[in-house]
Amino acid sequence: MSDEGYFSGSQYDPETVRFFDVAHEGAQIRAIAAHIQHLSDLRGAEFRSIVILPTDQVARASAEMVVELISPLPWPIFITDKLPHYVGPLDAVVVVGERSDADWASLALITAARRGATTALIGPGRGPLDEDAPEETLSFPIPPTADGASPSRYITGLLAILWSITDAEVIVAERLHELADAADEELQQLSPERDATVNPGRALRDFTADARVVHTGSRLEQPADLPAGVNVGLAVARCAATIWSTRGLSGEFLEPELVPMVLERNQESAPKDDIFYDPFLDGEKNLVPLKIIVWGQADSALPHSLAMACTDADTSDLVCAVRLLVRAFAATAYDVSKED
Image (tube, rainbow, N blue to C red):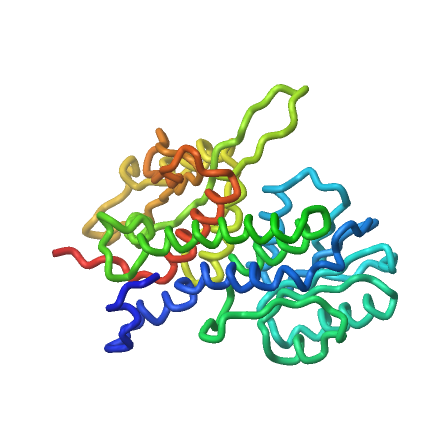
């Protein structure tokens, strides 16, 4: 972002402070892209498995999103909370997350390194987890002004590791810079100084104000004899729901097949048909509205729903996923717009 008003340093309000971490998402990706040459030892490695150990909810959701977006992969990938007993020289172990005091993760890295496994850390950049990591553990720098969790760092850090195993350094760096460009383009639209008419993240926040929120997407239906398609909407919806929940907003993921049933049940619970309801005796009956966010679709026929999609039809699945996730992350930073 290059908005002078945002970076001038004058009169930071709470919304701007909350947006600070979001504003670094493009820089987080570029920091990883600039570090690709340090992953050269991974090139051509024939791993038996890759074990991902997330230290927090957002890190786990980010890891699951990566696996969903780039599967199938040449090796089995396990996302787990414990170091498997079989881990040894044929395996890679990656710890990812923001918890600097995750003692169990530190022990897992040390144990895996002692067994001869390749180890990597996509962590907070400070604290015991970083300080105790074995010397040979691969790690990534963090922009000096960044502070706090970064879904983009988790996702692109994992992508950098996985891509570096099979692809040349220059190709991996090019892909990461493309993702960074996409994040920065999205962030230009998401400046806190822009209102909901030109800021899709703020429009998203306003739409879901004072409501129960369900995140969902559409499921791709493909013939059985064709490779499975990438469900960008579902991948983003799962991760976005976790980000919202951990940042204090209502957000639950729901499979698209279950959304109609939930809407029907919600309608049944409305008080309008209650013949015993007396507003003078019972007081005002307030039912928290249910709102649906449909990720990866340009429009939605569902009631009380808002569709979120990438406007450029030529955008790749991965670029679109990064843009939408940055938008979901940004929405958690905004205050609800005040009515004029």
